Figure 1 (tube, one colour):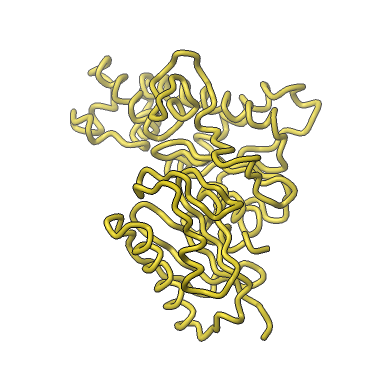
Figure 2: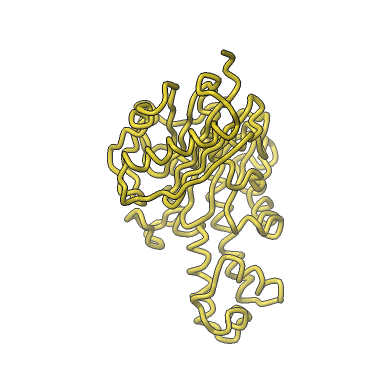
Length: 318
């Protein structure tokens, strides 16, 4: 039987998304189920297997028609052995999820970090389609990252590689959740932008920021400083200028190391598109090593949204 399909699984702390794609990475069908952390690894993998069987059944596709299954997981991942070394939001340590899922299917099963899979997804079907060397960073609760070199995920020599969010940006700077101070994540996550916006609003009661949230700083989100700046608020403009400078510095560091064909950003903040990226791109062009004498990729917004990780996981079986 001809193997025409690939299965991708995006495992998250609250949900499991399963999709089946064709050779061109078009999504033929998908299904989602909750991640019930209390069930433990074996129970979660059983739910994952059920979701795979559900979508295959709906599509009328036999297991024998599939090339394999790929999984994108949060946390530190040992892709060689199919093991999640550590995932705090799942309360997992050294869980061999490839082996557990293999109890349900007679197919090759591959595993990578979720940010890696999102990057590969964009490389095969999204904003970097057709390009071989891609870096992506996700600007959310933290700063995640993935790197594709010569069309393949760069996993490093051991688990825990490509954590760009935990590279140093400011010595002895803001406290990071990893325990270190001054990480890229501590300055450029959405969480960091919200923190800095709240600080500025407290120092400047006259700021439009306070008006937009009716004085309740708990309502500040990543969109608020952009809205305030649009109204001409100087305080918000300064917050964004600092954020964009730090983001630019972190991106320059990565470009100077990898010099990719494409550099992508994703996350809710990226809905601001050119308002965010125009000043960042201007900074990057000026500050990359050798300036415009060499190739400097334009920083662009990823396009696949919530499907990126699922498509990229499917592509692990290329």
